[in-house]
Image 1 (cartoon, rainbow, N blue to C red):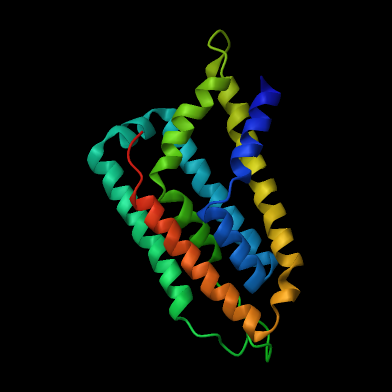
Image 2: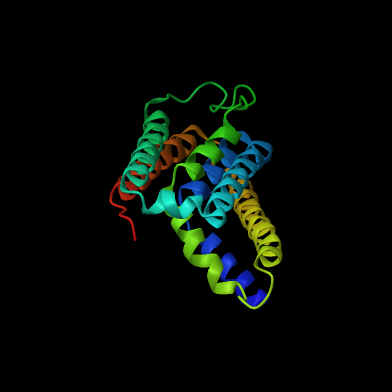
Length: 202
């Protein structure tokens, strides 16, 4: 059952989403260190949501129409804000190659925000983890293994995405490449926000 959990967790984490997008974007534009900070933010947010979900509080939040709607629309607004910011922010001299790219102090918070404000993640945790828990054994002991293992998998796979993004960053060194990346990331984040707006409680 443990191998099934690992395989399922890997497959789910490999699916592209807002967290993966913000990790790759920060890795390409600001370097692997900033991408890693973003990943840590994602993992911290996942840990918070996982704790809420498995403690029973997450179930209450997910099944509450008001709480779900508030969380959903705040998340939508944040994704659209990040996307719009990408589109309207002009390329600075750092991105044109005249000086090193300024590191963003917000990379960690971006990772936290994009993940923490996604109400479907709590619902996913509530539905996903019980499938791999043996009711005949100690549930708390199993969760103490599965929870950290899931977070390690998330970190590892997102770090692979960050490494890949950084490896192709030299193709985007020119102004046209930077502009295309900036606009594509902005549109993609807004698109994620639009999709998030259509999410209903499952």
